[in-house]
Image 1 (cartoon, each protein chain N blue to C red):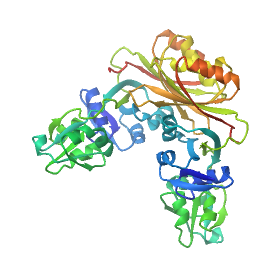
Image 2: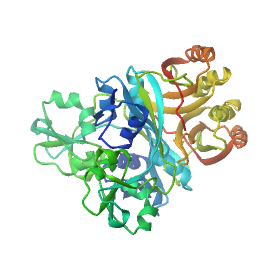
Image 3: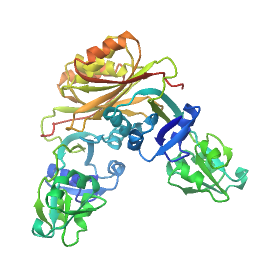
Image 4: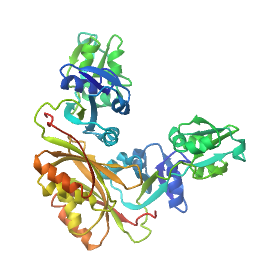
Length: 257
Length: 257
């Protein structure tokens, strides 16, 4: 399947797409905006990271465009050690993006390695000299024909990115829904009033992000994700519409953790 | 007064500080983190922009550090035309940050000017050749001894930045308060429960931002701003503390609009 996603080849976004789609034909774009503008209908975009929070470009573009959210994918950021050397004993220098090097300090110290910074983890894997290894996504081993000398070498397992899949088929029974809530009024307390529509109909929210409407300071819209409960959700949306505009982006199965 | 703030000299942050403090002695830092780490006690930091939304570094550092919010300042981003030329008729090229050039397209077209990009609006004003004018903050006219050839030349008046002042004196009767809310539990609906503590005690919220705790995906804390109502706020905080940790960052007068 042809899928538009953020490049270059070999990044963690690429890995997420490889794991989600069985027959991926990736079309790499250089910005999230280009992914949304791509003629390729099916798209995969990052929506949230456990360290950085919501991905602003994605949330703003979901509001401004006509796309249907059909799935989500969780990807733990596991750094793999890839090299043309056959053993870690033959490696003296480890190459990666500064963030990846910072996340794997114990591994670097254990083997007493020198470090070299690269523009991206994918770039590191692509341009290795002899005696060097890269910290990168595991898909780079296949792409650049490298040996895997270590798996999940990061110090802590806290870094996870969540992606949304757009305009594909909904694979299983939907359990989540994504909505854009745009209050008509700018009065304080409107958020609490809108959230009451969910709790009043016993619908649990799993995610909420506030984003500026770009019209004036303090004027916000909300991106929310809620559990799906058939007719209850329809009632909640009817109640929400008494406070402002509601855009239903789609229903989809929750990702496996 | 010595104040730590984001540099370099001549930026809009510098202008906000000039307007807020009567006797400013600015100490310029190169990142928001450096402002928080500075030995200078009084600090001025951006917290929100009408186009970009919440300033993540500021909100995360308010949670992680011990600082007292004592004021706020709103600054409309008005682009001023500064030049060593005496008249706009002698100008053929306008220099600025790409964002500023994009925000002043009508002005550029009206006078048929060429454009040159600079790293920042302050940088543009500092390094002007003859026949050039910069789009920059009005403080650059004094700093670099330039003539003001135009004021508020941006196409639309929607871009405003809000700043917080830390560890200064609270100048007038406080009407707003900033709080960090950190839910003990990760269950859905906790945000609605916590917001109920405000509405239950008739306290209006003016701002809310969710930010990841950086522990695991989906675990968030909240930065909120609420109206001050004496004892009612204390009662709301007592109720909030039954759901998690509450950090009161300070009470301060609302900025003039």
